[in-house]
Image (cartoon, rainbow, N blue to C red):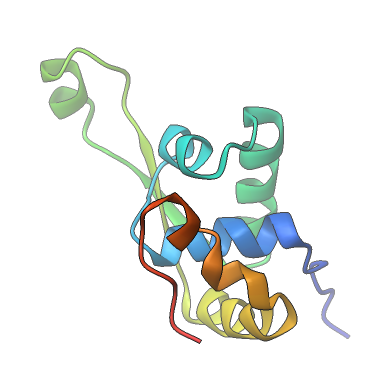
Length: 107
């Protein structure tokens, strides 16, 4: 039996934010208001379970912009399936962004 990751609201929120195009840790923290001690461990768990994939950006490009390199995250096919389940389980998930001036996520 394959172990499954618990689908919490926090996990669902991070998956939803990734699906909307927010790709790196600080951006996810800014959009959700979640602290780094919540976001980064959740991203590591999501990656370990195959729900997201990550890659580091080119160091030269980051240095040129005067900042450290960013680790970018994207949803995997499995992550999209989990997100669809999360959107059914947590109906308010699609409304959080609209409350802050964004568009509601698809149902």
